[in-house]
Length: 143
Ligand code: RB5
Figure 1 (cartoon, protein in one colour):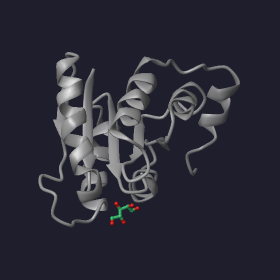
Figure 2 (tube, protein in one colour):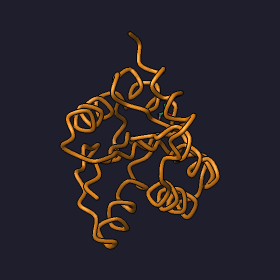
Figure 3 (cartoon, helix red, strand yellow):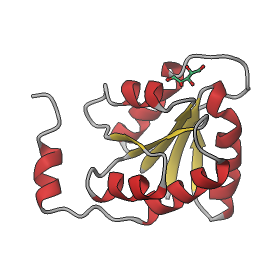
């Protein structure tokens, strides 16, 4: 897959490790920053990632900040984005199976790196269930 990834300073370390992990699995990665552990503002990185997912220049995205909420709130301002926050593998599975999340959001300050990898792997391997969930996600965009 071609995956876009971004973080703020709180997610910077996990982002670097996840990029290495995903490259090692043969995925193509587009890194939207941040590029240092210096304090920064999550929206500066969430918007470019959301634009890329909406345009289809990447197939999906991963965003990481301290709680995950700053990234999720910002990403979900974009009509074409369904950003889902996941803190364990069951949520990582359901956010794809039920919500077809095209951006996975991780709360770096509240999960281990090992859990982050496990969530990413699960989310990537899970398929959208369709059916009643397709009807539900069709009702999400503001008309
Ligand atoms: C950064 O301190 C923190 O506010 C940010 O990573 C995130 O948790 C915001 O939602």
